[in-house]
Length: 413
Image (cartoon, rainbow, N blue to C red; front, side, top):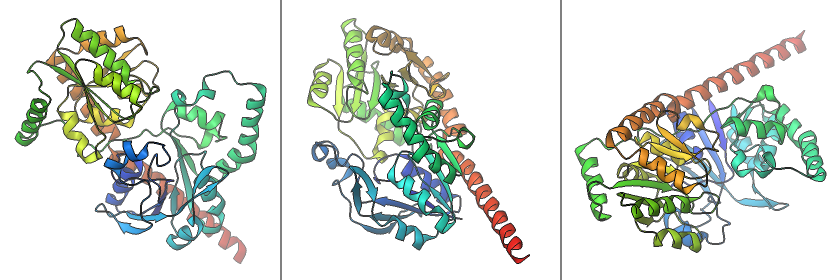
């Protein structure tokens, strides 16, 4: 089966779905083409060169076709803009060249999704979409909207969203709140929506087990000048207000002021005022962004994964490494933390510190970590999720073949 994954931007060094889902599908025997632009994620960020470029490379990658070690053919095309929105130039010609059986897009509210739907009748492929927008980052889902804005969404649903839904075989939001947004705002028909969670690469992300990995853990903690009994929390991602990493820093400061041996590693970068607050907090250590391949060793050297606000794919990776999690009580992906972690009252630093204290005993962390690791292997490994997705692709292609055959028989009659 020939599958074209269409993603508006892509980075080989980030651990997003556009790296791991194509690789898992290729491993299952599909011919996989990743069609993307020359833009890397966040390439328009005003501080891209300071924050992202040292790890992820220049904001624009060379155009052309390459093949990854996983067997995925990557097509980088020039990016363009339409009314201020990013698009992939030459998408029509590339799909005409590939002639895929299935096109897998991502965000519903995206120009590439509209284009893929527009071209579907010409090329005859089955179109699948996703929606990754959580209510925590979509204000209209939880705030009162004036009449003009409600009318605007109604027009969008009727004129753009519903026709897009008609052209789509299946839309896979990554959570229940993302599914609600896809239907309520983006016009997806509920009967075409099925929640499909994001995954993690459990062969890459796993607990420290070998002698070499355990030695690397000790070496890293020695580099951080860590005492033997110190409990290390880890946060990875953008250091921005909406993600709330400073809340973790304040909780660590509170614990250390009370004589508790807690410290925290922050992997990422962000505005100076937030980074400076974290760096100035006793027990907190800043670490720049790293290539996804370097993340497992950092997680393995820590003891608890903490994300004070919003959902993050890093939560899955940390759980796969056997870390218990502490997340906000406002997240919608409770399955990530059920039995293997705790929820705290969002923005309540005292409660966050209390939840971290509940995980002070190594046996407690180990027990919860094992539960999380097992769940990631059984339910959230990309190969498990890719098999489910491939079954849907096969059904779609089979149904289309039956319909085509029926039409041909009808015309002959």
